[in-house]
Length: 277
Image (tube, rainbow, N blue to C red; front, side):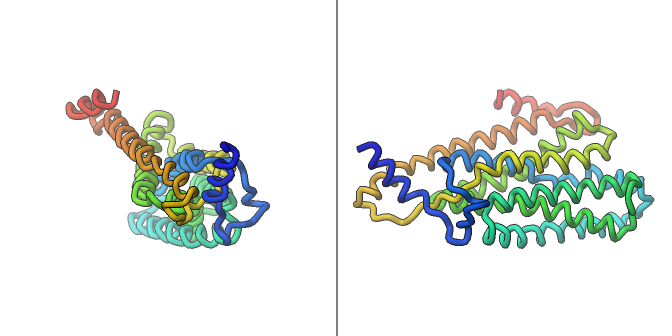
């Protein structure tokens, strides 16, 4: 009886998108949607590199003798890369699946930031247009990786609101995490930090790619046996609410360790620190 129930659940829930049935890139593995959710959150935490532009923009301005107009053009190229990467991520996911999308995005992100660091350091040509293009590539790769948000909306189709908020929230938290990493490990070493935000997200993308798999929630009659088994599994709403609450605690924890420019922590920050710990 138990084996038959498991077979029904598998038949009902493990349905692949027609566009993503590439057996080379998307072999069917015995995974749960929660392993995919965990991997997606890890990737989201590494997808906030576009929000730490202010960390290294002043460094690039000094090293390249740029003016504010050059920095503005670089920011425009960065934003254009985000838009282009989102479009390309959808196309790659449709043709080759989400695992291939994650791998390609990680490689592009790595290449863009490494080329940026090499150009700023004078190792390769550092004409203005080339550096704009390097940043365009870097943020395009980062945006391609954000396609995992679509996968989570597919896998948790009955809880799209929770998943959308979680993924976008973790992308924002990722920028705060990178800021803390910079302050603790790369302070006054912006060149090394540029390299770090190039190779570390790629490493996480490669590690998490095997856990990306499409598992749909099909519409089944609520009175059928399949419907009873499926609706019994809808306790995922509560689990997602717990994950949402934990993400809020993570945000408060990051706020608690944030220091102001004078190096003194504000008094209200201690309240959040105590609330989290």
